[in-house]
Image (cartoon, rainbow, N blue to C red; front, side, top):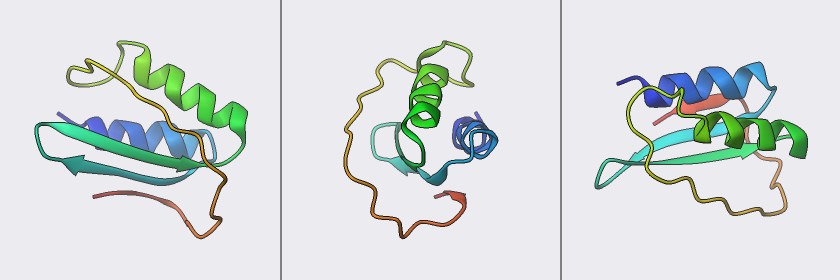
Length: 75
């Protein structure tokens, strides 16, 4: 479907670092660090309906950035 690739592309366009990881039951975990506004734009994109595949729900959890991530990877 290309969901992780699409998410990675959007995140890199926004200057974010992190990952998009496949989970059981056709779920994907997205971890992103960067400016809050850029993270909010990524959330908006994930909720937009313009993603590849079907997105039923996007949950968010805000935490202090760890600062140990580089790049944005697909797992």
